[in-house]
Length: 164
Image (cartoon, rainbow, N blue to C red; front, side):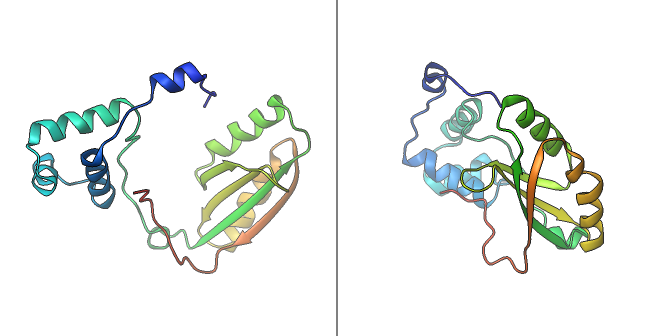
């Protein structure tokens, strides 16, 4: 995603009040709630709740609605955090890397980070053998990678998407 200018950021700024935050908290807990259920919970009528939700969607506060799936129950039994360093730090090398990893269905999340590594990936795979196959035939084939470190998740102690 291209960087926004300060002017573009200001244009996308939206002021949220306590009712907006209440709506967001409810939707984070259950995105299938109806407008009427939300309205009853926060003591507003349905029309202003609907308008607030549409405004937050239009302004990018609500990016999307999603179904959260337990990766183990869909035969993705292994989760790996993989740290990546690039050989060179320029736009061309970074673009090649980003374009490749964003197309891999195994990669759930990709972060550009500071410190010893340049990127952190959250990867799920069926098992160790399938992760090894992914690593050898996809990840390690990306030009420009200098170093990788794979950390295997042994247990998930907290897993939430709720910001508020």
